Image (cartoon, rainbow, N blue to C red; front, side, top):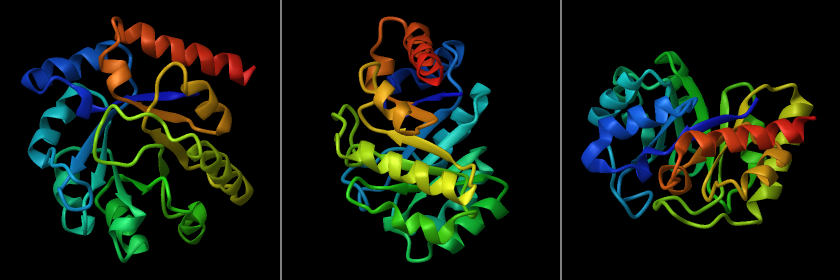
Length: 220
């Protein structure tokens, strides 16, 4: 079953609470929460404080930490109510330790990979993560177009996980819309992060329903 996670990065910040509720009412499965520090990526966004607001929406909050040394902040985001905490393989010197820390804090653990990062690094932490986040754009800004070469990486990770008997979720973030979703799902993605295309859609529920219908057709 495909899951949809609206990216709070694309929301109207002057109406954060209303935007969160709108996505929950539209039938979203998770809320994707992008955390940027101005170092790992050239932008600054939210901290644990806004995560507390996001956690009141009734949806599981998927915190994507695009920050250096994410270990310093794992506990703060767990305490703020995040259900999933994802760290970048490129942002920590001790990925295994960071994943163990996330699980110890009571959250599901995710590993994010930038477009140019090989999926091979996942092989050495199989069983230690619950989610693999494939970035299909360079992280740091919303509204970018999907990098086509990243679709092959999704397929490679799908084969790796299936071959190891690992049931981790494959999440995709970047350039997701109703045109790109089918090829991402065919490659093996099971959780799609949608930002500008979803928040800018005339009908958010219709957008989500369209992607679910596309998945149903693929799964037949």
